[in-house]
Length: 415
Image 1 (cartoon, rainbow, N blue to C red):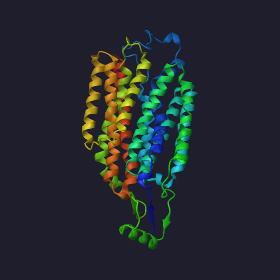
Image 2: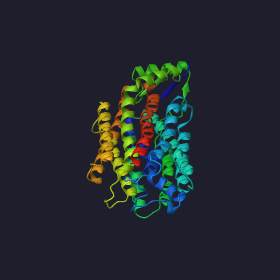
Image 3: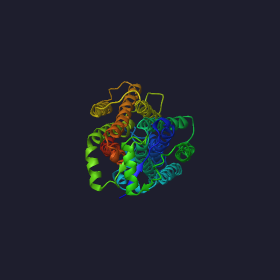
Image 4: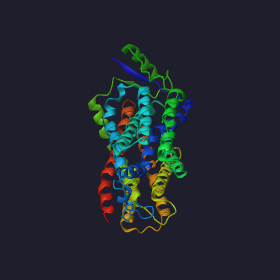
């Protein structure tokens, strides 16, 4: 007897700049934690291990030819993705009960807490807790803003994708640049506290919220009149109307089943690329290069994020419906670099730089095209839930990659 009527803004009047900015701020802490993973583990190792016990070879921290940390950077990856995965698996079924503004404030608080905890960390558990804070904020923010895009023109998805790609480049480049310029990781992380503030300002002051977000309801007879007017073309600029009450649990399960052909290739792409990023990048070390091991790792992450930014911003130019092709190409990248770590046949780090740039292009293209076609091919009634639920695909792939990276790290570091 009650109908929610969602009335988006006129698409021609909506700028995607606020969503670009929100995408950048939402993913910023998550990206910085992955870029700082090597430093976080090195910092805790140096604090907790007496110097005479450590074995050094130039800038190496142990006797392995791969210059391994005792703990794989996959530990940071898992702390960065498992909370996100838990949120994405559960939140789409209950998150509609929370106002969007409250969610944004919570995400900003978690991002700020992550920077503070990692900056002032005195033990591994504090650093990992800070990474978990970043994960919770980014995960809740992603499904929140993906759901929010359905109230605007479909074109804003390109803005959101571009913003998240910009977070990758901005976070990785800023962290790498400031630390290489001489700032300590602690000072660098503290300087990034401005990002959660910008996130709140972007949502509450820059984004023109659709009038349907403070949901208004009407009696059955009134809503039938509205629907009749819509059918006769008397009401314009309305993209989503007539959701007869909230989705039932059975309906949501049916939507999830229909999303599998989007979620599976997206998950495979992210499994392959994060297996590279957190399982292999740390082991792709070239001692004769002018960059230290930590600097090589940071720039691998930065170039990967450059590729992600370019491809996530490409939706206005090219759209790729065949997501399985992107998945298979990414798997080829992972196998190639796995063999390169084992047999060390790559001549220099510059070849790895090119490969990780290409890896980022594939990953970003898979992400933005997946959500574009979900938005395009899902009915109005189910679109908001579908956009939130599908976001679990990349997190599943990343979590699986983190788990797979541990035995790989242990094997190579024992050589």
